[in-house]
Length: 204
Image 1 (cartoon, rainbow, N blue to C red):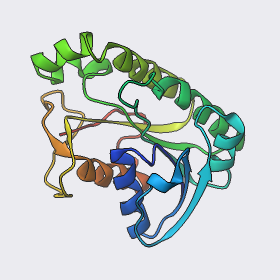
Image 2: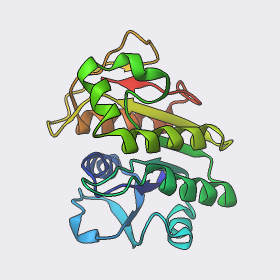
Image 3: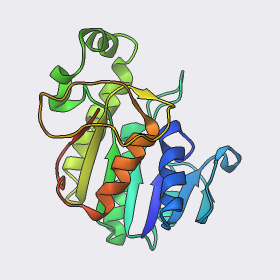
């Protein structure tokens, strides 16, 4: 498939990029600093730009079959998730690109009771602005009219891809540590699977 990738320079984004290229997909990745991209062999087009720039985002989306959004706030930075997603959604709607897979977090929306107490406290303190941005991001996606899936992972690590993770809509799934590589594996599976269309599966 031809995929537009936003958030490619982040930890999870780099895993999505590498695995997608290994699987033979064509990727258009928007990045402010392309030098930070670590790529696997494959076909990659890097568009230098900012997710808040509508023209640059439209350029990235143009001619693709699906969009993967793994935007994340940099430490100390202003939350970007909702603002960037709004620009992406507008570009998709304008160009008729319908499939969207976005990564948010367990603890957002109706998954609040799936995270441990210490993370609930963290959400109300250090992560309050970021979690609010993710809540708004999910609201925008739900209202977009697109063919979306929102993936909510638990605690992220930099470990290898294991395939040994649980996923689904069951609220008994609780947040646990898993690798960004495993999250990327699940995200890419959604490209050819509509089981979770208009759903918010947890990955843990």
